Amino acid sequence: MKNTLWILLQNEPGALLRVAGLFAARQINIDALTVAATHDPAVSQVTLVLRASAGSLDQIQRQLCKLVDVLDAGTLSLIGQDDPQRCMAGVIA
Image (spheres, rainbow, N blue to C red):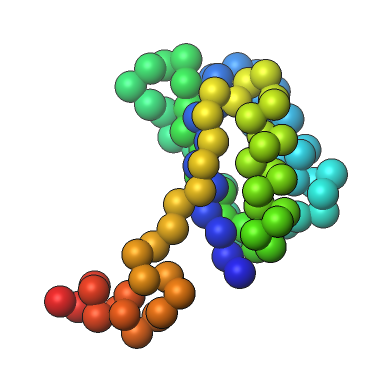
């Protein structure tokens, strides 16, 4: 199942490399990666789309928070994600 993670990361050289290395070490492929500036120039927001089981995703979140450069991390989900028809009805309505 595809999952979306968001990470608030200190905007320092090598920080993104350490985050990506966490996924590489667990042989989890990143499908999409977006990095954007925040209102604070010292902090960047990283959004990742990846395929992982719920257990792996929970473990990754805990290990991300242990990295020095990571300020906060969490998952994003769509309302009605479990029922695609309900999700589409919400978009159309």
